[in-house]
Length: 606
Image 1 (cartoon, rainbow, N blue to C red):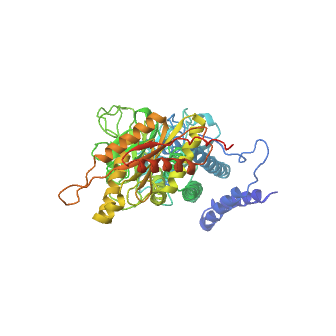
Image 2 (image 1 turned 30 degrees about the vertical axis):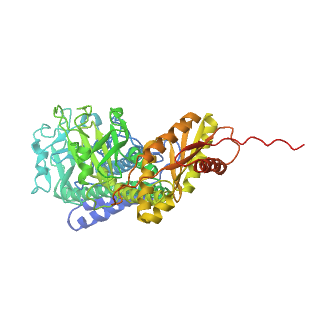
């Protein structure tokens, strides 16, 4: 005989003695403890047919406690599992399995308790547990009956449901009837079972003290129950409430641990990356894995903080939002959340007609999306304006619950810190790549970019034009007007060169001092010389106000070399060839463009 069986027998003996009334009533708490220990130590099968070897997937009822858990067990309302939304997160499936397992174990324990009561208490026809569906309704959760088909499992009792409705009243601690006229007052039967006696006590939530259900015994025998039965039933009801509360509390802790463990994993990913684009990717991956939605939109502000763009959108009408730009003056709810750095939430009743813009009035309207939740992400938590916004929309009638919002809020704070760190890293790297005075890339970065472009040019079989230019007589400018004026001239010429090339394709760098190098991507000899002449003429038109009678004017000399796919030398040699052409331009009178020509071989000596 197992320990579990012994404890069940002890629990039964103690309950039986307690029904003798009098001094034996004190045995009831010991009976409940023995029964719970017996249930916890019962053997579990590991082979085929085992009831606890796998995680069952079952339809869950609302929990029989008034305390609102971090995650409620009603998956359809809390996690939208199986609702046909565009995104069904993997986390919802894991949560549903945990709740299903907890619910199955609690139901099994309740069923064992009901079977014990029916076996110990004489003349019991049915033993039932009603649990809370909402604040004003209790529904059948478990029952045992000699004729199970006679109980309607979908029965609901309310504050106006006849005899059992008395248990909703705070002053009623038990219900004891011994001579009922018929079964009409017990609406959970579908047939005409001639019930004469009933004893019922409320289930009290251990956290709030709220009545959240009832434990009921009935009998076809008149006066089948007495005060001792009602008192014993009160103790059993307390054990059922505690079992329910502890079971769901344990599942809640497991789910929270699981979800915050996932949050920790994303924290580790954030610290492994120093790229802003990678931060965007991790934000998208996390939301996809943990949040249900019909449309997900991720927005990010530009560096100037006055405008931004949609960096990601998937789901309903996603093509209407991808890469769409916005400004802080737009009147959409997404923009408002970023501008105020505050979460925004909106719910719309079925049949609503007034569309609320997400970005602005020009977007496509979809009245089927009835829930909106926007979580802003700021690099600094007290910033007036956020940097990123996670925008969730769903067609569900239920808004996003508190747990989902708190989970996203915790993630947003981590993502904000990682985003700030990545931005500062990229800013520092950008500063290291550029000349501090002109904002152009420096010599080291020039060769890195030219090396990458040369690899692509070799594969694409196209040429790159290399221009080396120098400011004519720049030393005399510094000697005559001073270095501050010389810095103004250098900055002005750098800006002019940048305007005359394709800013998103070509490369321009400050090579050193008054020298500049331009890389013209995918060009030919004619295009290279034409661009060089355009730059030379634009510089020649510049005038610098030096607070004298005449403005200062300068010119540049330019050497050009066409870097073709069959060029065998390194990039330094290509720049040197352009520099040699520049030297000839200066020798030839300055303010001109000279293209590098390959030197003809000298005649052989006889």
